[in-house]
Image 1 (tube, rainbow over the protein chains, first blue to last red):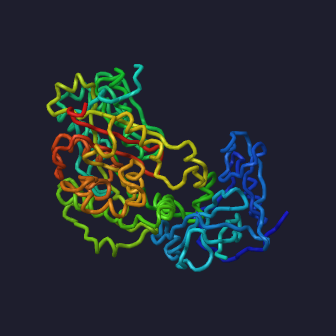
Image 2: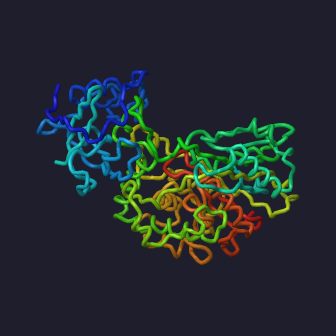
Image 3: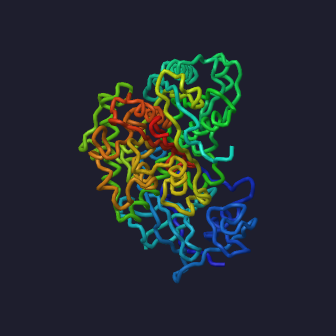
Length: 154
Length: 395
């Protein structure tokens, strides 16, 4: 088991919503892993397809209950991704965001996990120029009750 | 029925609308607005409301068919269908589901409609105040600041522009300017008397890059309705019937893969749906005289038009220009009432009404001799839905 050292104590955004595991049990393994700074996604035992987000069936072959697998880390022991798309939010859609705009939200492809895409915030300068294709790495943002996976430019 | 087509098998004979208001400004309830629009459509169609026997709408419609039937004095309600999922995207399917009912004899006079009144606590662009628990797909989105539709979808246009050589900002601006231009001729339009200059667009505040304030639809109160019947019954109507030539709905089967992992991500949803529309209608994009294309966001209109084959993705900044998008002289007059951006956001249903008006020759921004109109609902939200409407000459 690889444990990434990449963690952060500063939050990109104030707490807007408290993510909790789906009561039906679908995504529990993800939420448990990120508490330990590990990144897992689904992987089908039948066809080996990586899958994100979680579902009770494999999107590729239809097999039930895909398992979970850790995303293979890069040479530095970190989870590496590539910006697939992005947006910068200037309008605060909730009162807590009033002093948090602008903020960047990224869609990040994971080349070591079948290019599945995750959504997270950019860590660092929120007005930095962003380019599709830029490499990023995962950073674990630990809150009291949950952990968010964020991304910083490499 | 062995012939899997709706072409020429249903006609729109009546249209009706309430006054359109800024959000939260309607003095009337959504029920009262709905009754106003439906009664106006009946008067336009030359029928008694008691003759109505069906209602079709789409998700997030609060006033329902049982209450409407009672208040309008229907003898019998025979058909009521709500398009499943997609929010405003179901707009065109409300019409085509009604058409299916009259074409197969399930009902004689079916209303397709939307009524909305936004209460103060229900602004579309807000996430809500407290930090509440979220689970399921929302748990992977909301904590990162994704709530309102703009935050859900701006990624798509960003990626789409990237895959088409970086084009698209000029085209989406032209969509906005054309809509506001058309609204200046339209006294029903909430933005009537509020023209938008290119400079004001450029200076407007960014909401979610790449979308500015004027790339967004409005938020409004109002109701719009139209009445469909069989071609035989339509002949008795006071206005020239407008015929359904084609209709389609749906989306790629892998569109809904969770947390934005759609199989074909940078599309507005019409890629597999548009060819089915043209097949049924027996016309192509080159035959269309006027387009009413649902605008939640201007960039999404650009994607819709490309996916319907009006131009190639790489050409949008050259083809989707203000000059080409405005009536009467443009090559592709678009959203000639002002649409969701500048007339009113009746979740797109006003676009269907305007399509009918163009084919009657009654638009305030009339395209001379218009015979074929394309109307679509969606984009981005799915299932997406669309229609081709035609005059009798196109049958």
